[in-house]
Length: 132
Image (cartoon, rainbow, N blue to C red; front, side, top):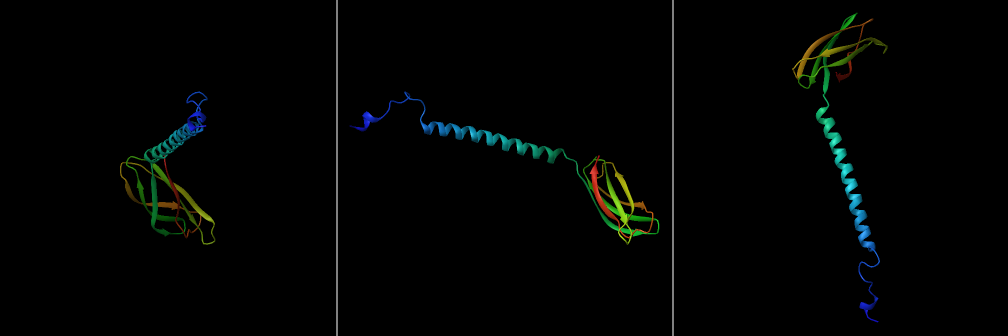
């Protein structure tokens, strides 16, 4: 018997296993590509749209009933937001906490804020900043 007589006629018995595997690979590649594209789009949207505000305490001066803190704030132009500042006593108990708002077109703001305390504060800790 020759090899020509053992070959099956093409198209008579459906697709070959190689063609089915190629089709499955193409489908799975298209699905994974779409998921990757959606993920990149999601992160790009949140990176561009998200407004940011951050700050740091440069110096502070504590008295018996207040803490004056020099804050350096960095924010997007036109973004309004607030930063939360707290002070603790020597024993670690919280003696004051307040939010300070920052608005306007400036992207860098240096401001001295006064945090009133219930007792002598020994720290001026920035807890965080939020846009809004």
